[in-house]
Image 1 (cartoon, rainbow, N blue to C red):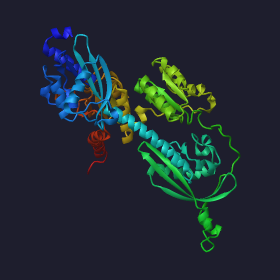
Image 2 (spheres, rainbow, N blue to C red; image 1 turned 135 degrees about the vertical axis):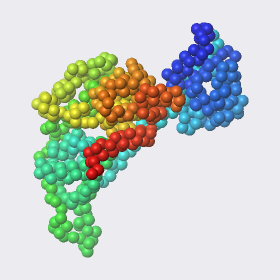
Image 3 (cartoon, rainbow, N blue to C red; image 1 turned 60 degrees about the vertical axis):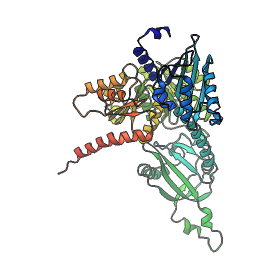
Image 4 (cartoon, helix red, strand yellow; image 1 turned 180 degrees about the vertical axis):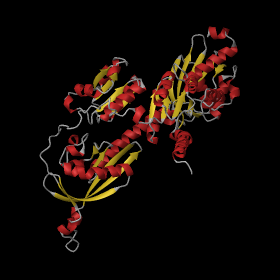
Length: 559
């Protein structure tokens, strides 16, 4: 504090404000007499007090009393956030807490608000209190818990339904089946999941079914099919097969439900019964009898079809390339950008009992990540940057003990493998260095059906903009290497006179000076954190929909 005491008061305040803003937290400094030395502007937003109470010399007692009057109740008893205390008792309790040498707590001033509060009393008598609003983080944690419970309940419900139900992804690979479907096919779940219908059913049956499934998947129109099925055990069932499409654009799934109507055909009584040949005449005959299939049949497609792989790299373009190559071979691929996200992914997968077959770690990431994977019982493969290419599936197959001959490698020179820059248009470039925010952006943008790429710093944002020519850029202003302002200015300087890309600044607070700096750097608009699906959808509708209309107008000129 001595250096700050001798500094110019204006410089001192500017430094402390910058520190608070960089921490995205409210900072309160007070002296041994419990008088305010410095209070950042975030205090007014978080604690809902008048700015006049944040000036140096204000009594902490008066500031706390104003907080109480504004409805703020900082109490560590999170199970009873409305714990009754009089105004004076509450203020006295808070002042006593400020004199503790150190304390950290997660406090709940309202049902939907959570604050992280850290207090320190220095030997000099000065004290510091740092307050961060962690409500969004708590809501995400709660949402993860609810989602996990919902998945578990959904699985239990599906498994107890009497109808055979199966779910296929866009590659026609089974991703879910219930117990009734396993009984109907006379196969265990692990002989169905991760496999295609051609691995189980006859070629004639699959050739007939493929265009029907494709129609439902592409149009979303449900279909009902009457089928007379001879099951593997030789019994015959008259079924109505219902096919539906569920999910969102880019993440559709095909659901098949078989309804056994044999009992209806027989009738509840003699007067209601129908002749079996009359009833079945409109049903397509299907013979599902087959040679016994082992519990784990040999996959006749690429070696890594259905294999669950987690790619770990802090370089967004490396992760995107690995995901694209492995997905092309039929693997189920996810990605993590750093050690914390990687550990969280493994932890959530273990808690949800989701199997991960292999972790592919970018050799530029810390070596300790291999030990983390092994601690969770997951095999790990470290791969040099040069090997994250067409031969990556071979390395993955070898690590899993799969025969190389089963691999179907794309012809890179012949452009058989679709690269993002050639066959897929990138709609949105997200420049964001915070791992949690990256996850939020990814989930929202995927849910809205747009293609995106992530940049973790300003320099990478400029490089990925040049590589992918995205239709829109979401630019966090507090990026490392180059700030969002500098990266935006660099993009504007590099544009060659064509239609400029819309750049949207992402701000932590609604300060006028930051908005002005965004516009001066060449940004078109700003949005505020925490990001919501509604806010992003509004931005996309405003900028991307306009661009699409202009393209259509050029393609179809009015005569």
